[in-house]
Image (tube, rainbow, N blue to C red; front, side):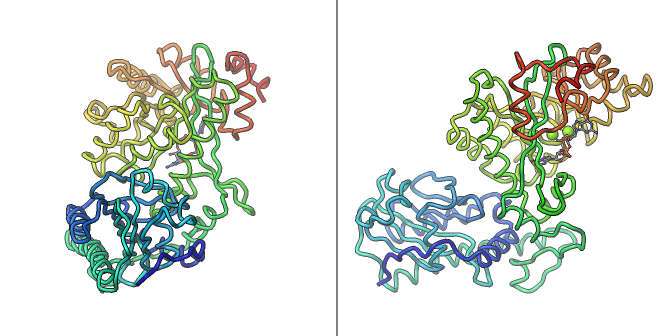
Length: 466
Ligand code: C2E
Ligand code: MG
Ligand code: MG
């Protein structure tokens, strides 16, 4: 009879990297939950007469529950849950009575909180055998264990989850124009060919592992009072040899290979941590809003609102202190999901900004039907404003449009006092740009926030800020 296994520590880095590569190429995290997964968790629970059945997939930061039966569990953080043991063991784990196994108590907090005693989990594997996730059952009452037949059945059910995944990939390859149908394995573990340009996927993965990403923050200013009302979080890569790298040099690659998901998770958590630090330093900073940029892929993944909500609780911050920015083009790929996700974020009280307005489709109906409350005028328009009546009129129209729609408007990329004056004259309330402050490290921003009333000196005197 398989016994509860003693933990063997984190899987080796290489094995973990291969597992994550297989996970990302399965695209499971990006796709909507399939009804077949729900049928599978129900079947598993019924077969084993379990109180809860969970099907979760494991990336760097979270265990994403793609289906739950008996109890809504949407995600768990990585590192200290009982599911981790299935990964470490690379095989089935059965714990007849959690309460008797002292070494598992910390790992089984969630299950214990909801009154579970028995736990069993088996890996869900890709076609080439890599662990992508875990199928688990839990019961209120302790059980003697599981015999070989039961384990065999449990593994077959997990195999069915893996087949569903493969079917999904096959279906996609038939319906996606231009997609070629390769071998069975190549469908599930197809890794996009690497282009020669730096950085490559392995560079980004290493940077994540080595914690080389940092957030800089650029002040958003009330153009009439010059008070800092918010901060935009902008990611940089602090490369040990190449120095500080712009997001424009690595975000596109991260979007292509899926690493934008863990990178984005890190950015959101880091911004929340920093908000907490600033609020502790001075409770008046509670009125500051820190805005985080989201890419299309982060946004089309299920559970974003749940994840954001859990971060707010974890860091003890209010939803008013967090904003999210996204471009219109990131919404276009899946408008229905976008609307759903945005609406649930708005229900949480998170402010939503449409970034770079004017550069994409700039569809009025999108602006109207999505629950954005802030419109950010792209800096290319602000930059051209002084070139003539027409570019000036464009900015005036955007500001007016925002007013009519009841949205706040932020002008990006203000570099000169001329632009600053013109924007104020047309009633644009908020702005950001090098004229006030470039993106700065958290420490530098902390110093700026100590200015009386958080009010920046007049830009013409801005040397005083430096
Ligand atoms: P964005 O969200 O539109 O950010 C504004 C960009 O304008 C920033 O570039 C900022 O440094 C730059 N900027 C601010 N003021 C001025 C100015 O007065 N003049 C000029 N010329 N530029 C100014 P940055 O930091 O290089 O970021 C570029 C883009 O990368 C961002 O554009 C955003 O789309 C993306 N990005 C940055 N951080 C993240 C992130 O954490 N996640 C995601 N998904 N995307 C990010
Ligand atoms: Mg932005
Ligand atoms: Mg922008």
